Image (cartoon, rainbow, N blue to C red; front, side, top):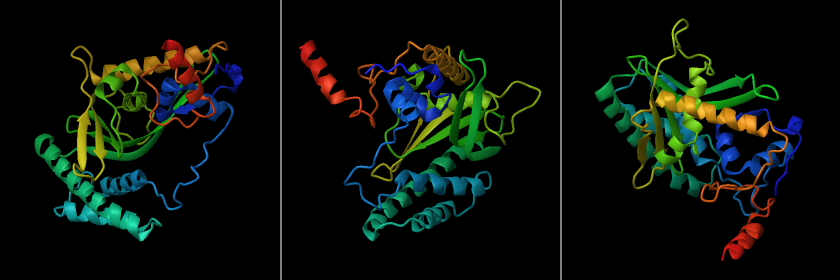
Length: 299
């Protein structure tokens, strides 16, 4: 499929998570935002299949909103109690609750240990903001304003005023290679939004340049045998994380300009090896059919 809809029908507002979809599967953006088609739930999807990731995010949001810079002495027990409170608020089958609860307790233990180690080495952050919603306009795009929106799981300011942007994942982490090459742009785009004042309520200096991006950090929180994992993005020697954020913003601008060309089609899975892990519109695009044909032709 190569649909080239009129530019007036193309989206002028996307989220930071949708930018990765736009890169890996432009057709999915076309189906969702131009055709306005929403994926239907699977027929056998359990009626009580609550979002495990939502529970993890909700518990950590409440915890760091109250205890971010005032770490309690009984942090492990208190955070476990917070997870139990959020879990109890969900309408879950008893078996599912029994399955998830010990995993959430292990996540709480890991988070406290990770925070204790970080604060012992770097000191208590000067400020912690959680679940921040933001937006930034790109006012001079060829066919009018394009707006990027997003929600940052957590933004820290260290004692020197530098910024650490964190993201919680309950699934697979992106590789550093994909982040640096632009295929997984979520955290760098959040940093770019921050540098442009896109998140309200942050203590940014008014009359001086924005602070440097000191860290882009993923927490993988599964509660399994290895309950948590921290992965920080390491930039190239001649490129700071601030530079990475700016380059990712420049890449987004180039994509907006490309799709403001009415001849630019929304292709399905245009980059072999960079397909999305979950493709909601693959059946609509008949990906299995034409992909098999392409494989046979190549053979």
